Image 1 (tube, rainbow, N blue to C red):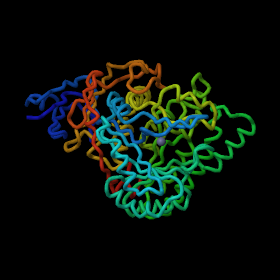
Image 2 (cartoon, rainbow, N blue to C red; image 1 turned 120 degrees about the vertical axis):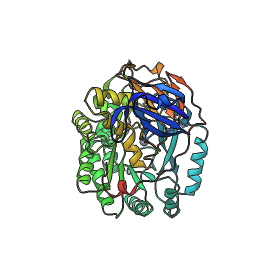
Image 3 (spheres, rainbow, N blue to C red; image 1 turned 180 degrees about the vertical axis):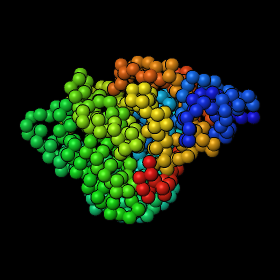
Image 4 (tube, rainbow, N blue to C red; image 1 turned 90 degrees about the horizontal axis):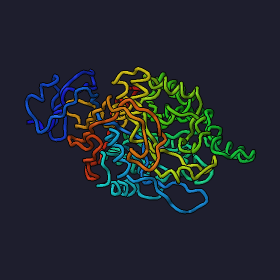
Length: 476
Ligand SMILES: [Zn+2]
């Protein structure tokens, strides 16, 4: 007898979207049948999903838990919310897989950095999870020597910054020689480079200029982290990678039309490059910085302009953007609003919980996207790019039974007090057209009608291997 059957919902499956029964045993999807057919066989539990949309659990490929947050005028170290808080909120919102980062400092043995991060997360995450390896600063040969083994062990992606982002807090930027070397190592080892690309010279020049002109308010952020910077940096990274046999790129938080154009042109040349944007960048612009508490909409690089919005949205329709992430850096509103200048305002946001419902609303309800395209953008594509497919991101026989029932009758107005992360949401007052009624992680019902039934011991580490197809051409 099956452990669980999700019966009669509109199931968004790899080859079709139709009413179906989904049978679960041992944490896996083991059968898919006509509506009512599996339920009729009997099961440990049958969940009636009639009237609901049944999708694979959401995947957020870009979050930062327990990361130091800069506090203006203080040496106090404040950390973003830990995996317990963020992953719990994720489950409530229908996201079951999170990809965070393992900071790998050049002088620390790579394996020690990875193990330290895994120890922090073991038993502390409600969701399944993995880590991008985050390189910083001048690289040490031991990193390049150890990377292939780390990639083989399932840490298939490496994050690199081309900028220090802010004039203070130096040391993020990896210079182009080291990026070149990293790309070569990853190409051989079967990895993927995830790049935060901004032109450091332009960004630092603009900080200096605006400080000189006494225009230091954070509402000027889009002048510092500007569209030209994205243009120059994306194209420079792409040119470099296109010259490394076997390299593949994932551009994180694409924010501008220039970034979209650079990715599209490279894809046009057949290069395996993928784009991520944030729901923040799809739904807010730099104009929102001028609202009271406008810092809450900010995340680096920066919100941009109406024409960038248009280009980003267009790119989600089988163009340059494949995945919608949050760049979650969850913290209390007091900390989010503490910085008021271009050089001290904290980035990231709190948004892992409403991501899925917001995207359903703006994609399916407002723009008429197919359910399959919506699921691709919030789950399946990230699974494919990051080497988790078909274990994750699919309602198919053999996949993990990460299943979400999205209820179009449960639309609501988002309120921070009803969400499960920190004390504010940048989405306060937004209407969403659906909300998850049930979230299932590997066959276990972890949230049902707003009740948390999961445990921080549920989340498993996910080793990842990027498919050759993804790394050889723009496959999605
Ligand atoms: Zn980030």
